[in-house]
Length: 390
Image 1 (tube, rainbow, N blue to C red):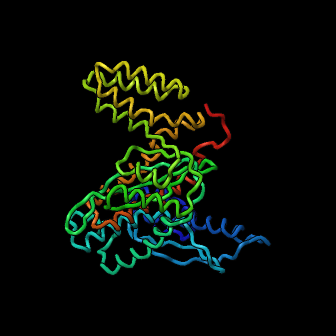
Image 2 (cartoon, rainbow, N blue to C red):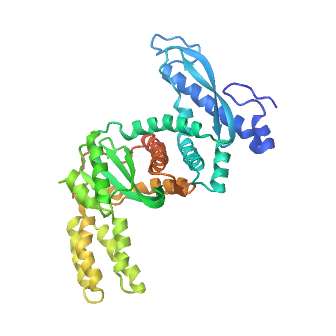
């Protein structure tokens, strides 16, 4: 079957794809992406094809063929051109950015000789051909410039700042070490959320956190009214040094998990969990503190260590009561970053052990850009209108 080189599905195309199975996917991908790029050019120009308007931003100038290696094979796309320049469709770039980062990471392992046969096979499967060291170096340099631009882009006012960390295995100087992956997200004054930045390092935790937070400030981050995070080791001192005076909300979900470590008997866990939820779900801070006192008294004899831990730690999870009630559900935990962590885990487990911190940062950044773009184009995360605090 011969496919038409335009942006519409040929007659009987879907039936042919159903018959051909996976063999028809490259052409389907080409048609869909071509259509998206053509629509993107029309939006950029402000006019449709052959439409006359004094407000047009430029003039269409045909198409330029570009062959891209994808997971379904090599695909030749028709990239729309603009006579005056300055236009490049993001439909193609965004869809391939994170896959390219993953491919480069695996290819880098292959080239450096630290990969196994399995990694080499995955690399060839993703790339569709054997990758040379020169190809990896050239592609890496091009991608790293784009990723670095995102990590250093200017920031503005952020009302709520979420911080979280996870760890990845990274090779350095012939050994495998745990590299901390720091992630920062925020909700701006319009109520939209975005990922603000990521960082990967093997350095001491407090120094890494302090450098990361300071970099956010240097990029223009301001207006923070609340920081939401778990009690990560090293974060407390760094947070106080960079954001001294900004209220801190300790993640209630992690507090609930931490409390279970101090429950002396298994049969008590569900009861303790219910008592803690009642405190967190109180209508206001006054009621929450009253419930906390009763809970501490309740377990003072039967679980003294638990009672002491609750008294010392749970107040750190009650800061949220000083903020609008309509916001509390989304600012009392770092659960909003769980999607990020799940996606990071899903993609990085393909690599297993990164050949170096730079490879880890490359893939983490590409994934972060992809998720942040999705967040920003979705509906408003919070309604940022004046609301009386309880």
